[in-house]
Structures are given as C-alpha cells and as structure tokens.
Image (cartoon, rainbow, N blue to C red; front, side):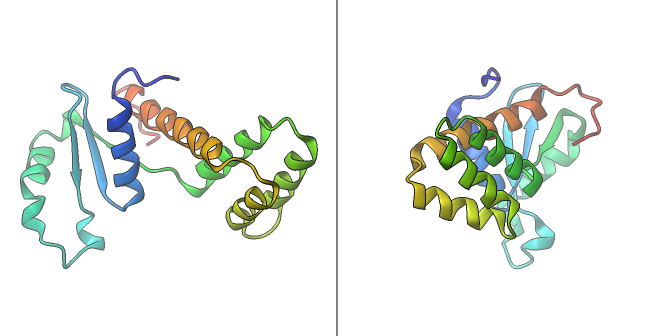
Length: 147
C-alpha cells in the first residue's frame, strides 16, 4: 500500500510521535494531523501547550480518528514478514529461531547484527510496513471500530 493520503514526511512524524508516547489524531475532512500528550501518563507536562489542539479535537471529535501505534504483536508480524523475504536460508533460519526463543525482539536484533543483515534494509522495510499500518487506519471505513 502506498501513502496516498499523507506525505512520507508526515508518516515519519506520526511514527516518531506515536513511538514517543504521544497521541496522534487525523482529521478525515482536511487531512490535518494534531498531536497531544497522554495527560494521564504525563501529569507534570504543561498541559497548556496542548490545550488548543485538545480543545479542537474535543469540539470536532467526529472528524478525527486517533491513530494507534503498533502493538508488540504487530511489530512481531513485521519481523516475520521481513524474515520471509530473506533469500539466504541459513540466515532466515537463524532469524526464525530468534523469534521462537524468549525475548524475540532482543534476539532478532542480536542475530541481525551477528549475520550482517543490513540495518538500513531492515529499517526501510519496517518504515514501509508502519506507513502501511498508519494508512490502513486512515483509509478504514469511518464506522470501523476495530481500532
């Protein structure tokens, strides 16, 4: 799936914000993005910095969808998908084993370093998958409650 709604830069910013613990809202009518803190998780953050955006979202809530970050299950699936495109069978098998053992995320990273899989290739793959994940949320039917 290619980004048809948001630019590559917007997608990157959304991913960074979500991974940084922020809330990200997408306005379906004008493609505008609003970002806010998770007040309950940041009780000492100056809320007034976010008040305008939070007010806008509350007043026009039906126009916005809150984007969610990948769960660990989603991220695990991305690792599986990446392994599936590796043509070198011994490397693929080592990475598959890494996912079976306890601490699969740590093991995956460790094996990637040991076998010399390109970090750039992995990060580009992961970013494309995350962009698809974000776009799927944006393009989902308005009444989709699976989010």
